[in-house]
Image (cartoon, rainbow, N blue to C red; front, side):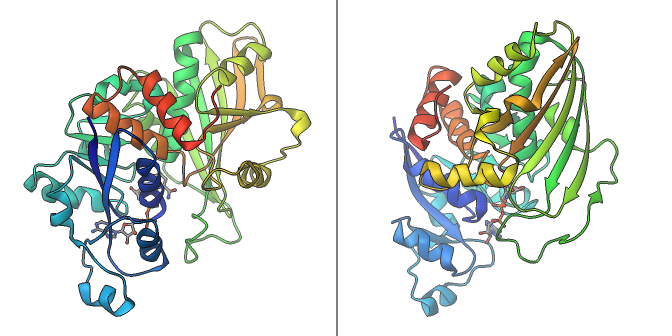
Length: 340
Ligand code: NAD
């Protein structure tokens, strides 16, 4: 069975999900949408992705730019088995009625509230729960990072208490109008929304989160302190537990990765189709077990971490793989994410 996929919104997340879908043998990318002509619309065309109008888009603007349009969102909805909504925050909710009217199942992103969907999704944590669902939400970049870490830690060691401070990048690299460019902004919602968002996947997880925004575009960094019920015997055991999981990359001290700039340089060097890092990034010397407590940093590449999750979410909804491990392996091999 090949599932036909449309992508509504070809921005930071949508263009990456489109490229990822196009690489799967059990999925077929039918088309993508744009609201107005841009270099990204031209990229879609160059890649051979049929382009459809969405939102308040005007056909004459595309005609003036010389970019052919295959139709409108409703034409695209008529040809797909599932639509992946990659519209800006909160717009996904407005799009629900369009998807329902066309009777097309949909995947939403983390900028939507959890109740937009029947289930919030993270492949390592709750893959089977998406089976047969009509609306699935792939959680945000930060929540995906925390949920993956919880998938490694909770079953092995039992979590009694977890505090995470989310050091958030101010904007994506292409968002030139956002800031701050000089300042650290506390998020005055205490605790921050990230903890409750992780609990949409792990309902009983005793996690409390706070957040600050810093002037960088590269990645988020999470500063974690976890208290375990059954702690690992050593720091090495915990490092190895992260290393053994798909979608984790642990740098060694000798690699001299001082922070997020070197992580992104590593991404450029390793030569995947995009210089992205879809894994949770940890440092072996940034993980420490002390008695029943553990400390670890993890860096999250906000532009790409949710991309493999979207592919797995489609497989999970349509039962295209027997289990999470099979889907994750298939996705990761196709995207060049190294195996543990
Ligand atoms: P973006 O602004 O880069 O892209 C959104 C795209 O949707 C744009 O191409 C825009 O033209 C298009 N669009 C506008 N109105 C539309 C409409 N009515 N219908 C369909 N498309 C429309 O945004 P993004 O960063 O890709 O975010 C998309 C979703 O992914 C949001 O829910 C966001 O919270 C989530 N997300 C973003 C990141 C990130 O760091 N960028 C990480 C994880 C999840």
